Amino acid sequence: MDAAVYSPVLSGQLRRRPLALALAGLLLFVPLFRAANRPLPLMLAELAALVVAAYWLFYLRGFLRLDPALRIALAALLAYPLLYLLPLPFAWWSALPGRADYATTLMLLEYHGSHAASLLAAQTELAWLALLPPLTVFAAVLLLDVARVRKLLLLFLGVAVGEACLGLLQYGDGPDSILRLGGLQTPSAVGTYVNRNHLAGLLEMALPVALALLAATVGRGRAQLSYTRNLKEKSLEFINRYSHHALVHALAASLLLLGLVFTQSRTGVALGMVAIALSVFAYARRLGGSNVFGMVGSVVAAAIGLALLAGLAPVLQRFTEDPLVDARWEIFSSSLRGVGQFFPVGSGPGTYPYVFVHFQDKITEFVNHAHNDYIEWLFEGGLLAALLLAYGFFLYLRQWPRLWEKGRWSQFRFMQIGAGIGAGVLLLHGLTDFNLHIPANSLYCAFLLAVFLHPADEVDAPVRPAAGPTLPISAGTLPPSSLPVFDPAQSPRNPFLDE
Image (cartoon, rainbow, N blue to C red; front, side):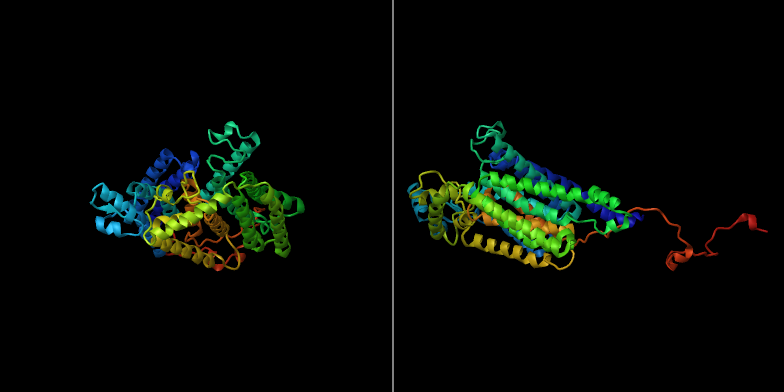
């Protein structure tokens, strides 16, 4: 093996290994302590993200390796909160939409100095720091090779299955269960999260990934079975090598679905049904990568998916509940009034909980989020937030035709499609909740989007026949290029033949 040829590749792999290990640590850490929705775990995640980002940016020069469109998106998201921290002359700031009452108060206090565009600069700084973990994970995953991305995706799936199992145990043990780890006393499954809707957000993201792996592995290895001699060997070959992968993924998908049901989240169960329907549409005709079961397999897969949807429909009506169903509409209405008052500048990233108080009419409780991520972003960021959202959705939609190709799909292609469906489902959940403002779920969504947008062009390795008895091969059966060539000029001298 030529060291001069292989050392750059090996060096690049070794340099990316710490990056992959750091990402694995972040994926494991963020859900442990209230989904990092508390100051201390969030601060630790931000510090880790700063270290990873520095390694990615300066040592690996990751920014220069990104696709130009993704480079623009990443730079714009990082710069977006910082623009609201730029100091403006007081006269300019007071002329911005929605600042008149605040400017009057400051003038009564005889303050006439410069002011950041944000109404609360400290909250905008915190919002910028909270962006670092998801953006760092997103950028770092794009730089990893397919093998490491696959392992990280399996790790994410393992975390989600663990949360689902914990939620099922909590539900079975009751509201006072010690397994709730000091959280709220609620009959629903919450895992290590505080809110059942946020656990539902994690599980609905992971469900299409598990279904993708199930569809990719079921029936795999059928080509290898033809090399075995009898039915018994074929059966043992299938059971020992291939079916256990599909069974594990089927078990994972079942646990995720059960955990989702027992969160009792109406939106979560509904979006789980959407994830199942989209997965059936995407995978039914490509089981095993190239539809190894033919039309019969596709029909059976579609029938199973429809049966699941039919079974979940009464669950959605009777088992789930939404205590905020009426309050949400009042919050939406009041928030939209705030959007209109501050448009096109917005109140500043991270300021919603403190500014929305002035728009509350019938609501007497403190409202920390708009229960609609997009309305809250428009409230805080105005036109700039709308442009960033539009650009992000453009990149997401642009990737689907690139992945949706005819013919055989590799296992990683299934993973990418599952990640795209999972991230899309959480983006839909943002219409009725604030999952994207929960640090753990925002990081996982960024991770899935990076997998979905990963620039991999991988095909499965060719199928190798099963090991069998070695047959003698005559020289006449070898191709000419493989026959040894005798060259007298290069052969060593035999001293016993010297005269």
